[in-house]
Each structure stands twice: as structure tokens, then as C-alpha cells.
Amino acid sequence: MSIYEYMPTAVHYVYLALGSNLGNRQKNLSEALQRLCGVVDLHKISSVYETEPVGYLDQPRFLNMVCYGQTSSSPDGLLRSIKTIEKALGRQPSFPNAPRPIDIDILLYDNLRLETEHLTIPHPRMSERAFVLVPLVEIAPTAIEPVSGKTAQELLLVVSQAGISKLDIRPDTQPGNSS
Image (cartoon, rainbow, N blue to C red; front, side, top):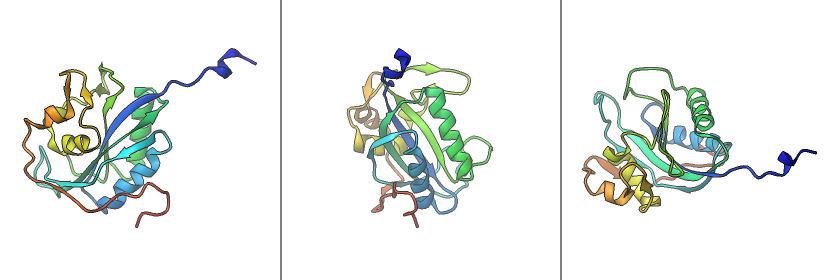
């Protein structure tokens, strides 16, 4: 037996943002959460918020949420898993800010600062987006964005929250239960 068989797997803390504005948006979020459970041990899930689109405005409103959990995946491994989930739920390559059945973004990964061709952590626009910050503050107001050093709550104070409505729904994280 190798000594590596006894080495514990590193655990990383991640915050992910989910959004959907095509098809059954609530079901899309539930199915994405269910599939994420295969790579992330989810500890906290925000409420669902209905929000106006950003960037490209001629599209349906979004349902958005944030979740927090632990993963043993590397940042690139987590991104690959996310892309697989998005594709399985019907996401097609398109233009930036296009309508989509599901969008999953890595907001924070430990206190990592990373910039590669395919991945930037923390998410480069999270501090500008109330549809990310509002649900993030709900579950982790003191989470630190490592570039600015500010908490999620501090970042939210300078962003307009217009067009964001908290909904009285909770996505299901149990397979086979979403309707």
C-alpha cells in the first residue's frame, strides 16, 4: 500500500451563483443543484430571486441564487464539472449575456485569486451585480472578496438593488423531486 492512500483530500470552500431565464427556471435551478451535489457538498443555499437581465436586455427575467459548499475539486476541475452540468441542462454556446436555461459561475474559491484564459476567481463582475450580491449576502454577509478585501455586505451597499424580488420558493436538491 502506498502512503498516498492515507493522505486526506484537500477541501476547498466555494460560493457559486446560479441563474436561469429559459424554460422552467425553477426546475432548471433545482436540477443544477442536484447535479452540483455530485461535486460540491452544499451547506447553504440562498433564497431564489427574480431579477432583470443585465447587458442584453431583450430577454426574459432571471431566477438567481447563490450556494456555498465544500469541494475536493481543483478550480479547473470544478469549472469542467460546471460546464458539463450546464450542457446537460441544455445550455448552448452563444453571445455574452444571452438567454440561457442555466448559468453557473464560480464566485469565490477559498481566498484564491486566479486568472487564466478560461477562469477568473473571484468572478470578475460579482462586485457589480446585485443579482449575485443580494443572495450572497443572505447566506454569507461577511464573505470576503479577495481582490477588494471587502465583505459581500460592503460591496452590496454601493450597488443598486432595483429590479430584484425575493421569491417564496426553494429549489429542491433531492434528485427526482423537482416538478
